[in-house]
Amino acid sequence: MSNETGGNGEPRLRRTLTLWDLLLYGIIVLQPVAPMSAFGALSDRGRGHVVTAILIAMVAMLSTAISYGRMARVYPSAGSAFTYVAREIHPAMGYVTGWSMVMDYIVNPLICTIWCAGQANVFAPGIPIWGWKIFFAVVFTMLNLQGIKTSARVNAGLAVAMSGVVVVVFVAAIRYIFGHPHADPGFFTRPFYDPQTFTYGNLFGCTSLAVLTYIGFDGISTLSEEAENPRRNIMFATVLTCLVIGILSASEVYIAQLVWPASQPFPNQDQAYVFAAARTWAPLFSIVGATLLVANFGSGMGAQIGAARLLYGMGRSNALPKSFFGVVDEKHRVPRNNVIFIGVIVLVGSFFLTFEKGIELLNFGALIAFMGVNAASFMHYFVRGEKKEITHFVPPILGFFVCLGLWWNLSTPALVVGSIWMILGIAFGAWKTRWFREPLSFDAPPE
Image (cartoon, rainbow, N blue to C red; front, side, top):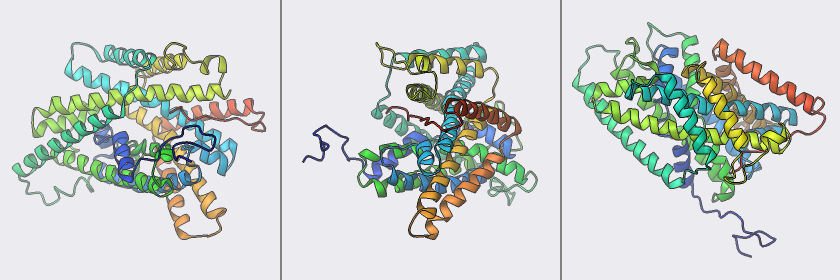
């Protein structure tokens, strides 16, 4: 029998992706410029200390990545946090995890719209920010209604271009830093720890935002059916992706904090990294700004169609009204109603949320999902597993409690709004299933 067909002769996915392919995919998804857009918000929340916050977040994400990789071994074709939780703990908890993921999918294009509007206004101040918000919300929606697909080659090309920009930023920053000698003995360590501004509240508040840098690493688990030796390589690739992005991100913000100390306010907080880069070499103002604009444009457009597909899966499974959310446009084969629905939310929300608050709302849902995956891994491998190994105990427990601590340190407005979202979703699920006595499923977004 050919390894490209199943037992009934039907074609199936080919296992051709190596560990290196999976690692490259993960880096592309997370982006080599991951922390640059959020640098201003991170610096403001942590009073500096962005480097330390990103490294602490990396510990939580590495532990969670191990749990994701292990659960991908058990469910090699699922690749969804809510699937792991529903099957290992309880369907109701899986529903809660799925509902928290909906927040991620909706808020992601919203914060991309806010950031793109702010950066475009820097380039073309003649058009007010509110005008740019309308422009990007409408463009994201119109393009997604056409069913436009971004190929892997385009994504790879963008990743190469972004990596080139990162290299230029490092070279310019190093020349600037060593071209302006500092007698202060604490100059090179202050980005890690500044005794004048350090508090644990600031640090963990900043870390709760820094989780955004790693959002998307779980996408590697969706490639389980196309990976060589998925039981080994999926976990290795997920962990290595978090490690590479964490070290790269910490390095990027470290040089930015050396160039532009936290004690100096930024002209525009959302575009803080652009101004820091321009201080080292003026042309970088346009180069980095354009690079981040393209990166956020691609992320925003992709996130909107991802949100629309998740809502379609929920509508198709009757978790939401099927007559609206479960409909596909016959011409373009996209969930048109959902694309427009998300577009309206993005447009309205961009006028009421700041970029920083948007990050916190996104991380509210992500951290709940991460806690769920860690709990599912703990239940499967340690509680139900035959061997009570320490390696099956420490990573999920560490990941769960660090994520819980970061979730607890989100701002009060984010916790309030996020809790309202969760209460509404749980109430709907309870009503729909007669207090979860009837099955209610969440389908993953179609690949």
